[in-house]
Image (tube, rainbow, N blue to C red; front, side, top):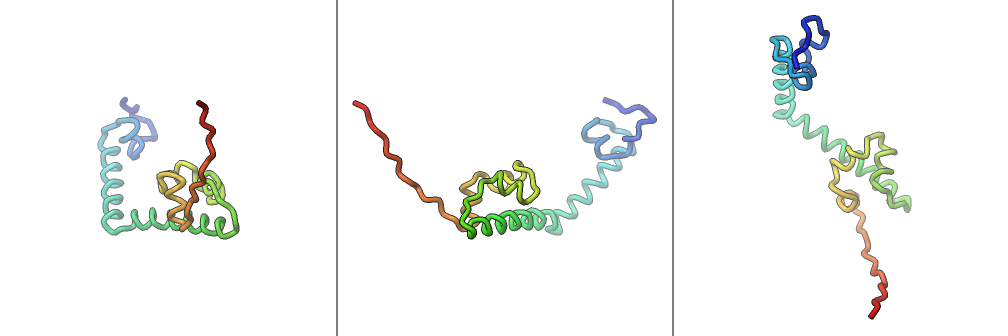
Length: 116
């Protein structure tokens, strides 16, 4: 898809990435964005931001657990303001979240009636 000459999205990363425009302005915008993003990665700022978010979520979980609640990931998402998909991105599943919070899930045996 090529953008019209008077389209205001020329010279944007969106124009380059999502709209597949390869004009000089869109290429320059994408190049600048990627250069800045890589520089942040080399400085550790991107990883630090990810660690900071995870630590905020874990701290919220610890507070709820110490208050006697066993929060679900959706509860953490609602209380933190992050989407539930973002919370799941940081913790593969609820067990990973509880382990990060220092909470151990107790395995409770379930009585199952076996029929002959």
